[in-house]
Length: 313
Image: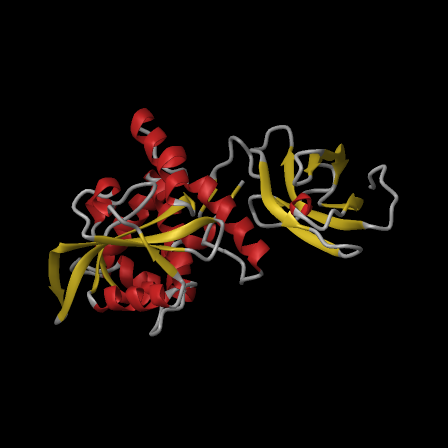
């Protein structure tokens, strides 16, 4: 497709649409595309079938007007979009977006206990912590998988994202020792972690990978300090420490940690658009939205695909 502008001083955009299984949308699926420039002028709006939509002849301004917003909608699906997508003169730019069904459900076919044993030994070991036998651990996990789908999805979102963060030594997931099962929720979980994780995160903050969240006790009762990943525009991991709650596990001094993923990178936006509305309505961060936001953010950043052990169908 192309806009009415035929001047050579233009940019090009390829919009790729994926479904909740992280696969290209079916060719018979009709999607509505809106392309808005940085001046808030709509440059294109139209319906197309398929997963790849080419936008040519988009105005190039050589200023803030080149920060485009892309919106995608389809009947029966949750809307998706991304901003800013910065275009340049006479060059193709790609943006990958994901549409998940409004009534979509979690499919944990790849997250069975045997599946974890085959491909995710570290996760299996963490899920087995704190109980007397693997049988008890498996029963506990199967109950979570069958009866608390949103909580398991959140756990898989967060641990997958943690595994992709490289600290000076290891990843945050490497430091977790034991899950606190009765405090798991659909927007976070709690665990005991090797207390050396705190120093690792502080060092990572000095290297620009995390930023401290001041006043963490306001949003996380009992917290002593908190750090948020700042790699992406949305869906960054936050690690909040409760240093007054400690435990020794297998001879390792551990501290309580609260990992979660926020929709928004900016603390003000997080408070105004996420925490306060959730407090008023009693709602919690939706793991489906986190899944979509983190996947889109990762694709835009060019990092390995965000691929938790489930899909949305």
